[in-house]
Image (cartoon, rainbow, N blue to C red; front, side, top):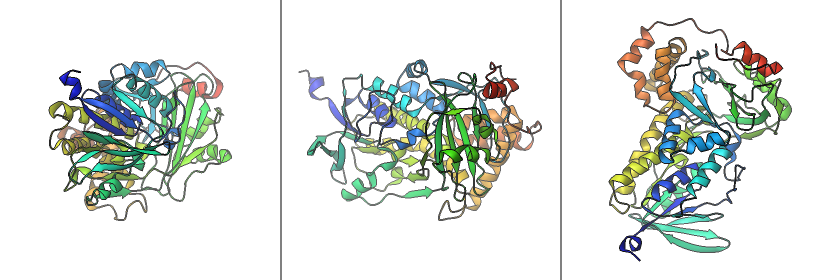
Length: 472
């Protein structure tokens, strides 16, 4: 055995979802990696018990697409070959802002979102990552506790098939998602609680898959009606065209106006949104599944990077750090960008270096903060969303963002800046740069659209099966 092989390090990743698999791919360049997953993961794009949110619409914004491609070169083409499609934003997006404006569509945008079912996304990523022989998957395995002390985590204690075992590791990454038990594990090591914040709009999601009507199976735009946090209850919805000639339709409503799992009520709820366009389009579509609902939509942030004490050998990524209201579609992009942050740190510091874990935690917090600002800046205004009412600063910032959205709906230059931020390609601070402020208050503005910018060919295709035309 060579000296290199004898000294090869080891790492454990908790969770076999998208974040966990991407983290394992990065760690494999530095260590032998074991992925501990409590579920039996399917061999293909099929549902799994531990990911109920997979039944709802997911969007991978261009910032996330670029991060994913950087981590796994060629993965986008693999997904497209399996039926995912690239939506050009704003060409392939019909969107109504929370404040009521319809955004114009145009053909000159570098932003490309990737749309497919979550089952397909995870299956393609999982198959790609597990080709690496340096990565071992331990399915149907429960993590019981972290091993080590308050100063250093040295591994994990696991249980599988009624037997317990200990895995030693130079680095343990928690990528177990919203249900992460990291606060409990850290407490058991003797560490103090970490600061948390929760902003819960009380949103319930209801989703159903439809066979795309008429000739809309290819090239039909995303249709998005966003809820207004200043109107209670807030209601919104999205039609996300996915693989297999299907529409994944997700409707949402806050307290007092939440959708149910009643199949017969789904279409009626869609027609009650701030604009009935989704209901109108669904009238000609055939449902393929029953309605499924979820209430796990709160924004929840754990500020691990601010902890006064943090153990060596342990870091948290993805939804285990922060989960967002899914309506903003940023969770997947943040996860991919957080793993990019992990890779950058590991290229600078050895896996056993002192302070590595805290460096990872601080680096991963940057994309988290960007998405958190966007989500909470809206959701904090829903009644009952937070124990504390919106601060004066939050109200001032929200008022400016409303003006920026208005400018974006009426000025293409302002819209491009908005898209840079919403696509997770730049920080929300970009909205407050002098050129954007000038566009908001002084820039030329076209008249507001009086309805959704669907073309007549698109409407006919949805209703009567006519051929799709180009965006006008």
